[in-house]
Length: 241
Image (cartoon, rainbow, N blue to C red; front, side, top):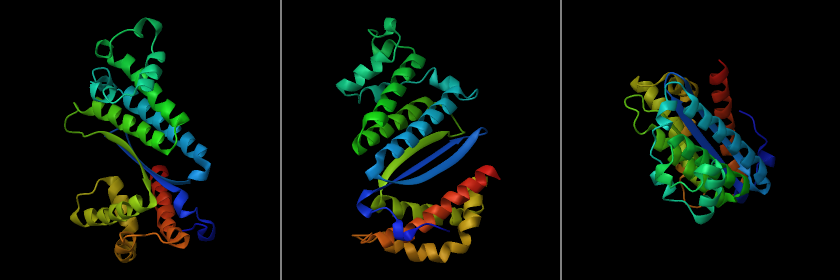
């Protein structure tokens, strides 16, 4: 596990991205990254790239793309602000711009929804990015809610260090526990087997990151980033193994 602890990003400027998707029989993956918000452009670029690839993956898949053609996006549309409506309509063909939302074909609605999400990614501050991720999650949920049994999903979370650290340590410990219960999928099994030797460290670290006021300094964050960076290496190894 390697990271430059001495040059770890400042606590007050750090934000974590966690994304997961599972399209059974087609694709499964996880993405964890952290960013210093002094340079928010890299975060915007990475989110834009990831969201575009996820929407393409789910909407163009032979097995799942059909669900986007019959999806009900009313719940997402109801949360639109006035400016969102303008961006949405500009993404439509001229003849569809005066069509009521509920009368649009779902594939046309998806074009507008995608445009709104990417607009918030390109123009937004941290709150705008969270807004974009809320819209993205709503699009995916609306499209796959009718899929039975296989439980396809894709989500993205944007969290502070205080929010992300306890969840992340719990996530790793759960992978180890699932391994012992022999209920793990191949990906979870791979993660669990890799982190099983580190279980004592994770169990010791869990109450530390859960304390009020953690982290108190940048060195504490740097130590946590050692685990995060190692996890990123594990995920990359699984993808290319």
